[in-house]
Length: 178
Image 1 (cartoon, rainbow, N blue to C red):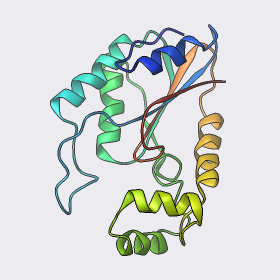
Image 2 (cartoon, rainbow, N blue to C red; image 1 turned 135 degrees about the horizontal axis):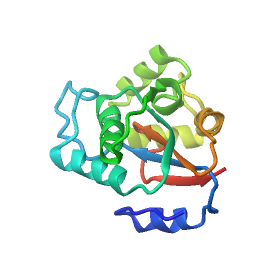
Image 3 (cartoon, rainbow, N blue to C red; image 1 turned 45 degrees about the vertical axis):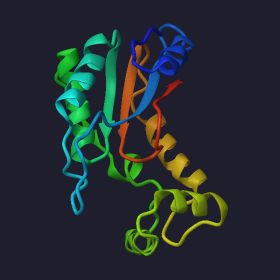
Image 4 (cartoon, rainbow, N blue to C red; image 1 turned 180 degrees about the vertical axis):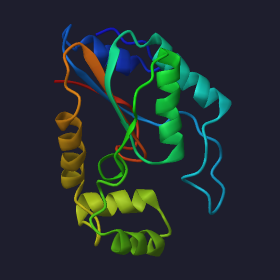
């Protein structure tokens, strides 16, 4: 698969996908505006973020078989702009449990933990990796929830399935072949 990206590792990974196979791409939302105190999920993409998502869609040389997003506004905007760049109309499936909160076992309890730890993501991730936290799934269970969802959807040959996550996995895009 040939994929044009600003990330060299994405291009390298995509090149390993056999021709004609289905490819799954996980990615985080495009460039967003500043998050002020008390505001988070409503923060929109910047003009640069919109352009980057549209450019990705425009240069994606494969049909999009399936597209899903967390329910966070900037994630949905990222998917909308990928589709606009590709010039296609397709339904974006929102999957908050699978693409936004697979790490959450009990929302009320996990919210208390976040609050008690002052939303310190590094400390939360450290504790999850080592001893676990009340209200949270293990990292392994979280990954299983997300990957089960990904491999239960799409799967048409010669297409790419897109999954826009919020904070999990936090970091770079991942390209998988089925």
